[in-house]
Structures are given as C-alpha cells and as structure tokens.
Image (cartoon, rainbow, N blue to C red; front, side, top):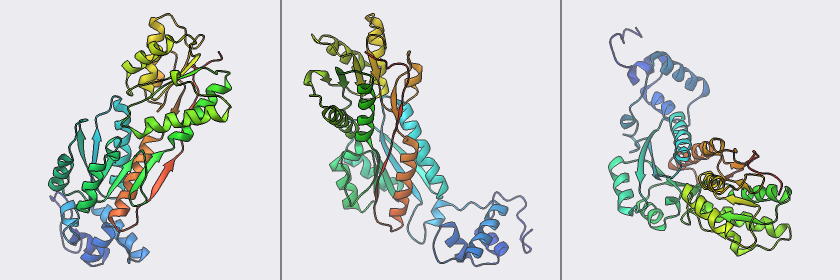
Length: 342
C-alpha cells in the first residue's frame, strides 16, 4: 500500500504510484526514467529507489510519446561464417541497450541485401537508430539511405571512418602488425598470408598491417605468398594448397581469421605436414575455433562484445543529440602451440 493505493494483484506499478512514493511529480519520474538532465541528485536517487521498490518498468511506447522516440535500437547484420562473432556482438549490444533502457531489434540479412530492406525495417520498427555491422557498414547505398532519412546510425568495424558518423572498430592494422612481428620474432621469413572476404574492411586492414610489418623489418613482400580467402574453413584448405605448390614454400601461414586458419591446420594434417614443426599457423579473432583446433591456434583477440557495447552507447548518445564519435579498440596477441621456430 502506497498512500492509499494498493498494488496487490497488479502486474506492475504505474508511474503515478512511483511519483506518489517518491513525493515528486509524474514529469519528474519521466525525466529520471529517461535519463534526462535538470533533476537534482537527491531527487533522482529517491525516484530510482521508488522504481526499484515498486518494480516499475515503463513501456517503451509510453516513454516515446512526448519525444516521438521508441527507445529501441536496430541491429542489421549479415549471417557470418563463424556464429561466435555475431553472438559476442549481440551480447555487447544487448547489454548496452539494457543498461540504457532500450530494446534491441534484430534484422539478419543475406549478402544480397537491398537498401529497401533496411528502409522497410526502420519504418516498420520505428527504431531510434541503427547499428550497422561489417560488411553492411561499408555499403554506401545503405548509409546514404539512412542519412537522407535522418536516421542516426553507428558503424561497427567499417573500412573507412567518416567524421560525421559514429563508428567503433578494432585496430586491425596494429593488431596484424603485432601478429606478424611475433611470427618474424620466431625466425620465420617466408610467411604466407590468406586474405579474408574482400567486402570486409578487416580483410584489407589486416593485410595492410602484415605488409607494413614486413617492410619495417626490411623484408620485401612476395606477391605469391598472399592468396585469396573468404573468412571460411574451405578457403584455408585452398590457401594451404596454393602456398604449398610454390617452389619456395612458406614456413608459416597467417590467416585472416580463425576459421581459415583451422582449414590450414586440417589441410596440413591431411597432407602429413606437421604443425608447428614443419609449418606454423596463426589466425585472427580468438573465436572458439582457436582452442578447438589441434594444436591450438596462435591468434589475435579482438574485444567484440566491448566494441558492440560502446557502439551502442555512442549511438544512443547520438540519438539524444550528442555529436558523432569515432573510437578504436586495441587487440591482444594470444600465443599458443600452433606457432614454433622454423
């Protein structure tokens, strides 16, 4: 019972009951719930205590009536070859939405995504903003559509950044340089490189970091040592075959992601090539595959969930009127038993 109002048998408290318990107006409760400014700290704390005590949960639709906001964020993503990537990305985005009182709405897409699909998603859901994952983040037709429609968006791992748009990325170039430096430090000089999906900015950045590191160490890159890939297991097996046909074979192979590296390792086992005694192998991402492969993969760990969490936070801030920002996250080298001295 709160000031004569019984909540027994009710599914949830009302905003009026919260206001009565905190001794404030309904408008003040609304300001606190929506994280708006101009509320004294002690008043904000009193309202939050009342919200907790009454287990009050505002409806997103009701919160958005005044400002025409739905307090929801859309996430548009392409189904990846390695689901663990999108799983961690979803965890980060969802956590940020939950912390800021927003709903997260998902729109999985295929590689033949049309801009009209994104337009329909935004119109039907009325999301306040959209998270774009790679490679969709680099689609000029999609970003142009959102700009023209006035829909805020944030890019996750784009190839290029725009000062007018919010984006968050791992530092793929620096991470790739560090990985190649590690391989060189073990004594390898013939290093094969299997590229990723050419539509992904990460593929180009990781190759750029690799080549930069070779130059820094006074080594001339051999074009024959760089082969095409597609961020999948099969391209790892194909890449190994192409590199093993060279008259001067590599002693180490760096793959653009862990799935591709796993394909290299399995292909090597099938041909009787010992890893790492005859051939060292490294991947990228530190997905579950990295520890499920035998031997376990040396790789680079990128903080996928943290990147998605930050991108979501910045997008919500952008929706609230704050200017766009571009941020980069460092990655960590994880050395395991797939790498050895030549």
